[in-house]
Structure formats: C-alpha cells, structure tokens
Image (cartoon, rainbow, N blue to C red; front, top):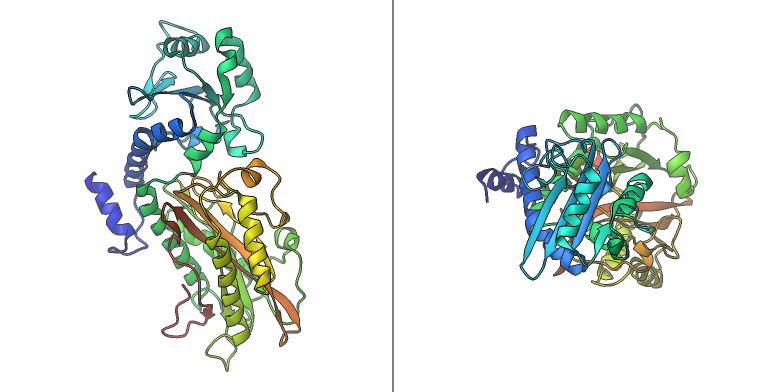
Length: 448
C-alpha cells in the first residue's frame, strides 16, 4: 500500500485531527488507488457472481451513465465524446480485460483499444473486440427497477444493436445485477474512508447545533441551513442536497411528511424549548453521507433536556435496533421492513421506516427498506426481490411518533445514521446519536 494511503488511513482512524481534509492532488491519488483496487480485485468477483463475462458501458459527454461516472479517473470530470468501456472476464484464466473504445486511455486502468486511423468507425471497432472474445453474455446498462443501472440511452442502445452481429443478439442481457453490485459494494479501503466522512458530518452538525451558530430568539432555521452549506464549502467539500433545519414545539401541530418537503417554513426563529432537527450530508472522495440528528434549546432555568424528550430519543434508538437486527443477508427490503415494523408496533412504538442505500450516490443502488409514503413495501425489484448483500452501506432513516402530554401534542423523533452491513452483521459507521445535543452546550455533554 502506498505511503499516501497509509497517511490517509492515519487521518481516518483519528490519530490526526478529524477535520483535516486532503487537498485536491491528494484526493485524486486516493480516488485512483481505490479505483485500481475495485477494478482489479472487486470487479472480477462481481462479474462471476452475476454470471456475466462481458460488460459494455456506453456514455456520451455531459449525458453520463451513472455507472460510468463512478469509473472515471480523478482527472476526468466527465466522459469524452462517446466513451465506450468493455470489461471481459475470463474466469478459467482468472483474467479481466479493461478496454476503452475511445481515443484515449481512461486513466491507468482502462486501456484504449481504438486506433481511429486504422478503423474510423467506433462501433465497428467495438464489434471487432466483441467478436474476438466471443462472450457468452453481453451485459448492457438497462433496467426497469434500478434507476442507477438504467443509464444506457435509447440512441446508443439502438446503435449498438444495429451494429452487433446477429449471432450475438440473443446474448445481450441487462447488466442490472452487476451494475447495482458495483455501485453498492464497498471495499475495505472505502470503509476506512467512510468513518472519516461520517465523523466530519457529525462534527459539522455539532457545531451548527451550538451557541456558536444559534442564538435563540434571533437565529432562523434558514440561517443554520446556509451556515452548514457555507461550512461545507469552506472545508473544500460538497453536499449532495441542501440541508434542512426544522423545529417542533409545544404550540404547533404535527404535520405530514409532505410538509417537510414542500410546506416547511424557511425562516422559523429558533426559540428556547424547541426540539431542532436537521437533515444533512456531504460528498467527499466520491462517497456520500446522510444524517439526521436532534438538538434541544435549553430554557434559561434548564441544564438538561426534559425527560419526555430524552425518552423519545431512546424510543428512536429502539426503533433503529428493531430495524438493524432484521438486516440479515439475503432478505429483501420489503421483508426487512415488514418484520421491523411488526416488532416495533408490538413494543408499542409508532414507527415509520424509509431506509435507503448510501455510497457513491446519496440515494444509491441496492436494497430499499421502505419509503415514507410506502410503509406497506416498495413494489419494485429493489424492495420486493433484491436481497441485502454484505459490504454495503445504508442510511438508517426512520422516525417514531411520540405523544407529549406536556405539549398536548404528538411529535416525531426523526433519525438517520450511516450503517454498514458486513459479513459479521451490522454496525454504525461512526456511531449514532444517543443523547440530545444541547443549545447552549452544557460542559461534559456529548450527543453522539
């Protein structure tokens, strides 16, 4: 392993300040090292598991297939012209070819196999490569149920099929299983990095939910949202969605989930006694986080949150436990959802679970475990039939409704944390919130 990556590992396990962010050159080196590992060690294994010996990924500049975006080297921000990648796996020889039917090498891993001066037509050259290898199956990125595996556009599909020798037409199949496994599977190196991403996310939330940012009676929810966006920018990072901040308080009624997306007030002034909630995530080293945490704004006479809110958070943690204990290899998202909801309701909780894959995309490919408006299950393959696989990451996103007599109303305890499902079972990537964050901070109090 290269010295740089060893240095990065030290950062990520906390021996150096968790907020130290790599510069662009260092990030590029890490990204390319990870790609090298994934292409040479992970991809052959995934192709064998999908029973697919050839995978053709076709994309054009500024209209990139979601899969090809995850394969480009760090110095490629987009595909160039029409970029065609061909992966050929010879299981008997234990080899994998990584070819580009393009004018250039695609980084160090994928070698150009097209000399335009010798063969002017790109499609003709692609068909020559296919015929020379005589694959049993040719996987293309089209899928009804997995949006991220459906990146082959109509024009390129028609051009491909029109140029393909007829004897291979029956060998063309959907590469959805391979595409989803490529997107969802995390390597050991990526999981070292993921801990750092979530740690940074937690740190930004903790700072946002503090007296440094929030002055009760003055600061608005919109102020905090834009502070978080600016903080991400100042750190040299990105976020894949605009942060949201909302409050629940004694004088307001519980509203539907739809309200959170379309009708939430943007400039609510944060007041003492408010339960403040955030939804926030970052993008770094081509991975994404998605986190929801809660803070309580102390009243002048208070030094801790009210017991009913403390208990409410514990109920949220209990619901997390019901869900994660049902995350078992091979189960579908709908099966996990149904079992978790049944157990939680038997424990007298009022649950709602809407957990999604997390990784190269914020709403990534893999097993979908409910949606906020589909608590009976997701009638698509990614919820109904697609199994939970090891070495995958999820945003454990859910809520439980609790009744607060003191407020004469119901509220939702909304939580979301990154979790890893591996061969040894489930674990949180960087812990979870088990205590409410307090504004202002009380000495010695920690929220994660």
